[in-house]
Amino acid sequence: SSSVGGEQISSIGRGLCVLLGISLEDTQRELEHMVRKILNLRVFEDESGKHWSKSVMDKQYEVLCVSQFTLQCILKGNKPDYHMAMPTEQAECFYNNFLEQLRKAYKPELIK
Image (cartoon, rainbow, N blue to C red):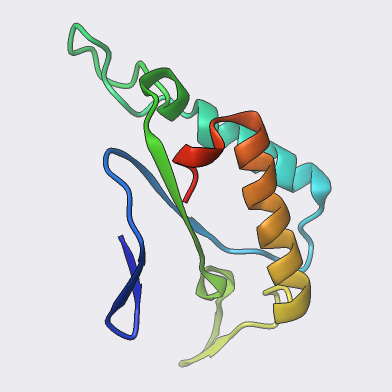
């Protein structure tokens, strides 16, 4: 689940929690690559218990996406530097496009 100020914003059952850090250098090409990788990443076991065999799409699981600019942090001495993170207005558009592409490539109701 994801909460802000003690209030739950969204939650899922089984699936993936994606923390998305968006860089100044990210383009539509990276967005499409991330969507493919997230939906096809084989991290779940199959019916016989074999690990690393099934993707979130194979299992019909959910995906919870959280925008996380702090992943773009560069440490300079003891102070975090976020200059490589995409600015808020631009990142919000990119993030919404990312969610839209995930929903188009999978089941919209399973993307949170």
